Length: 111
Image (cartoon, rainbow, N blue to C red; front, side, top):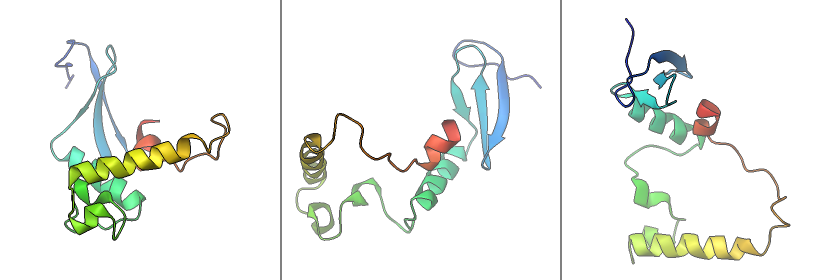
């Protein structure tokens, strides 16, 4: 069965990587997921970083005891914390030649 890209009508190829089923267009290079595959990607990314997936949402990524954990400020506090971290690291790098970051599961999957 040949799949057709919903975006450009090109032919699609199907492959599986790390237990995730992907369809990729040969023409526009778009990646399409079957039902439930996005949840598998999120679960795999969570497992890669060693975090438990027990009821934590996207807003729970703050540090323990930080503004996000205390509930003071919500999303604005999280954004402010991230900006402070980025601004603090801006001057500490040596022209972008710092240590290499740990790659994520998604980086390995699509890289």
